[in-house]
Image 1: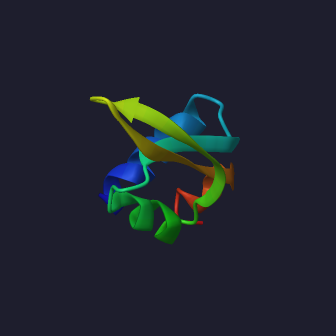
Image 2 (image 1 turned 60 degrees about the horizontal axis):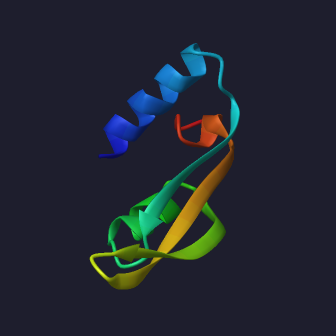
Length: 71
């Protein structure tokens, strides 16, 4: 998964993106730990309704895309 994220970040860079990248993840998803280990910082949190249940959604952000590229 780390390799895929680095490839995706490299492609975003080639398209001209360089900073303020974020992604959302359900707070109960173990991937939250992965995004944090990849240098993501919690920038927002809100509740979302899925199937009649309110779940936390967390936005992880990166101020510099280089962090995701492994620099």
